[in-house]
Structures are given as C-alpha cells and as structure tokens.
Amino acid sequence: MKKEHVVIYPGTFDPITIGHLNIIKRALRIFDKVIIAVAEDTTKDTLFTVEERVQMIKESLKGYKNVEVDTFKGLLMEYAKKKGVHTILRGLRTVQDFEYELQMALANKKLNPNCETIFMMTEGAYSYFSSSLIKEIAHLKGNIKDMVPPPVEKMIKKKFFNKEV
Ligand code: ADP
Image (cartoon, rainbow, N blue to C red; front, side, top):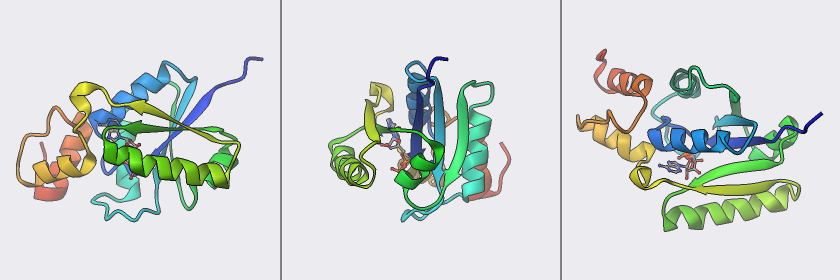
C-alpha cells in the first residue's frame, strides 16, 4: 500500500484568514492530507476560544476532502509524535516571520530530530494578511470581506458588535 504523506499545519488561527486558507489549499496539492492543529496553549491573547477557532475553520473548509481539524496542548513535537506525523508546515510572509520561524524550527528539530519543518511562501496578494491586523480593521469597523472566509466575518462581527451579518 502506498504510504500517505501527511503534514501538520499548526497555528493559533485567531481567526483563520484567506492567507491561511491559501496555504492549506496549496498544501493539499502536495500532501495527501493536511492536519490543521489549533494551539490551545498560546502566549497570544486570543479573541476567540479554541472551540470557536475550530468551528470557524471547519465551516470555512466545508466540502474540502483530506483535511482534519484538531487541537493540541503543550509541545507541538509531542503532538506530532502522537499523530505519527514527521512533517510540519508553516507559512512565511516577512523577514520577521523568518526570524521567529527559524528559531522555532531549530528548537523543534532539537526536540524531535525525526520531524522536518517545511515552509511555504505567502502568495503576493495575501502577504500582509494577519489575524491580528484583520481583527484591528474589523474592530475599527473596516471592511474585512476579502480577507476572511464568510463564516469568520460573521463571527468577528458578532464578537465585536454582537451583530448578525
Ligand atoms: P502562530 O501563532 O503559530 O504564528 P498563526 O495562526 O498566526 O499562528 O499562523 C499560523 C501559520 O500561518 C504561521 O506559519 C504563519 O506564518 C502562517 N501565516 C499566517 N498568515 C499567513 C499569510 N497571509 N500567508 C502565509 N502564511 C501565513
């Protein structure tokens, strides 16, 4: 039987953006399966609970095959071992991303030498999309329609303004 190539795409996803979706869609052309692993322990102050972040990802990826949405606590390398997966996917946008990602990739390699981190470059139009920027724009009542999938736009508006769209 052919070996399945599975990749874990970990992140905070607070919330998932079109930039994240772009990485997931492109990864599905390379890998047989993408596991989106939502971090429960994060130093970031999240707007959404882990359950809400998972729900938004699931709704945004409705109809997609070969994706699994999961959560993890603690070390990513322990989670990868538990899942029996040896590849981690991260996206790169800026030089700042690179500095942080290099440090994380090296630390993870030390913790689990059998696991490789691979990187995918953002695509031009999405390069400035980040969850935090999008939250800021939404909070200031700006239009985020082209930056997040429709279920996320709905949830953000509900969260900030208690308003259905
Ligand atoms: P984390 O808190 O782990 O950085 P994020 O949800 O912010 O989680 O991001 C998850 C991954 O997606 C990171 O590798 C990040 O660089 C990448 N990413 C986020 N936005 C984009 C984008 N617009 N284009 C490409 N990669 C992105």
